[in-house]
Every structure is written in C-alpha cells, then in structure tokens.
Amino acid sequence: MAQASDPYVKNVLSLMGNPVQGKAIFQINCAGCHGLEADGLVGPSLQAVPKRKSRYGLIHQVISGETPPMPKFQPSAQEMADLLSYLEGL
Image (cartoon, rainbow, N blue to C red; front, side, top):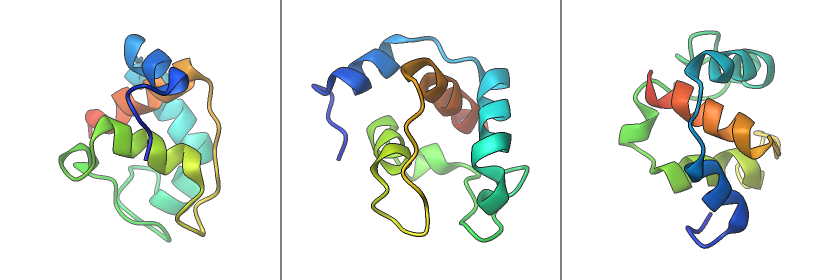
C-alpha cells in the first residue's frame, strides 16, 4: 500500500490537481477499460470511488500493477494529482 512517507505520495498530495487535466489523462490511459465516463466497461465503475478507497489507496491502485489486468501506470506526480482530482469529482 502506498504510504504517506513515500516521497512520490508526499509529492502527489502536496500538489493541486487539475480535474480537467485529470479527465484528459483518464480518457487516454483509463477509459478503454473503465469507460469514457468512468462508469465501468471491462474494469469496474469508478463512480464515487473516493468513498471506497482513500487517496493512498487510489494512488497505490494506479501505480502498483497488483490487480491484473490493470497495468502498472507511472504518471508524474502532477499527473497523478490531476487524476485524483478528476476521480474525486466523479
């Protein structure tokens, strides 16, 4: 699990995310499985996902590659902050 002490996580959480950028990142990298509106396709719906997973959990899910077939994805800290901002607005 991503930890608060992890430098990448600290960096992500220190940044202001841009949900518009986050949506673009989502549509390019995630929508193929999670649907254009994050309402599920091959992968599960991500609607209201922050109610089910913490920010640490969401970061870990994206970067770990521990839940195949979801690939390991290594966005920059700003991209991850943007993606979190978008997901939190769903």
